[in-house]
Image (tube, rainbow, N blue to C red; front, side, top):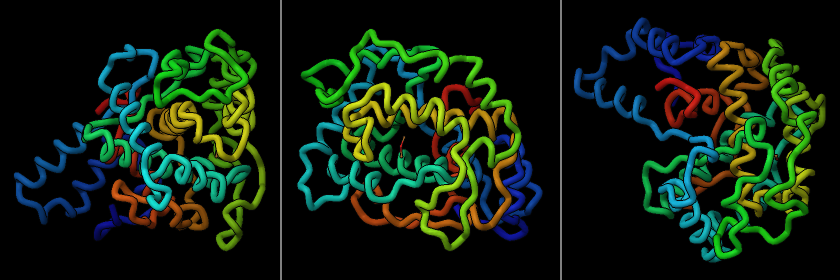
Length: 300
Ligand code: C2O
């Protein structure tokens, strides 16, 4: 999605809520170039975009879980020359993930989105959306990750199905404190220069330092390393982190950074559903929960 005539990046970054985006598109005259039918199809596609669901609401036989298992199994079986291969996907994280700075949230959002696309392709389920793990409501690792016969299993974990993460890391009062922060930099971690290496360290926000880091170290094994996406729990853990960004930005209407040094960053290390390299900007990731997917906590 690119900027249309009459729309500035600022407009998008400051529009809060889907209603705001649609009103802005309408007033821009941009939609006047479409036929009624094209406009209707476009709006229907957005309205019906895949929904990321809380994994606690899904039974083990739910089609979402079945598709997730099928996709991961297929990724594990792919040739190492294919960028979509399971280990290659984790290596992208190992080699490029930014932490301790304001690229944390957009980078992991883009990473999950392209992974989700690969899952659609390899599961054959084109409506597939990644489930997320709400560790605030359910502070134990979801049961589906403990079936040794499943592709979602990882033998290399320190914790079992009944171990509980401390409320001091993921509990309601900690999360409410994080969501109550109104300054983007304090919510999303600190700024780095436009030309700085994307792994430059600045400030770690409480969102990053408290629930994010501690869920990784609590699970341990692969999750305690930069190869953490080798454990399928990773994708549902980061789904929750992304869902909290949606809650903060879209549902509560807090503004993301309006600094071009943030919005204009490009990431070129991901690949699309066919394994081809892509180029994605931070700005594009801001729009993803409006156009590409939504959480079950968002209205369509
Ligand atoms: Cu880049 Cu939670 O890891």
